[in-house]
Image 1: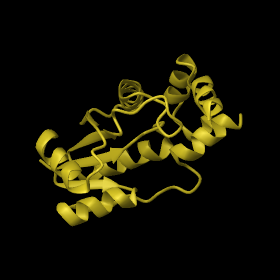
Image 2: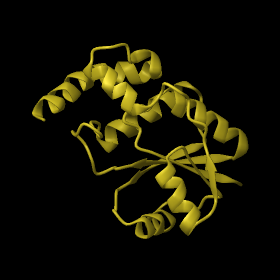
Image 3: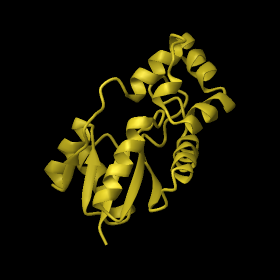
Image 4: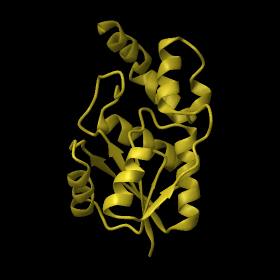
Length: 167
């Protein structure tokens, strides 16, 4: 059985993440989804908690009939070598690491070497989505329907705007 590690902060999970997971599952039997910066919440870069992000992802994958995954928290350790070691020691074994984040890819190339770069989709990123939320622009088309509904349910846009106003 081949297993992939897919790392992201998913702030929020968006259409490109879903596309990537579907592509990864065409190459491996199971995907380990590691939610990075898992200890962070209520900041401009990380407005949603680990549990909120986990619930968002699980809802989308369930509705897309994707079952071959597990989700794990992945805290920031601020040391590349310790971070990769933490993953190797605390998450299930994997054959490949998939990411679009250059820092993540560099860490794994240096300490593990089983990386596959995902192709980023122009115009879709969590940063773009959060910026659109702040500017009251259409962000909903960039995320699966379940994510838009969840963010509305938890007053996520209002939360982000409240955080923004603190600075």
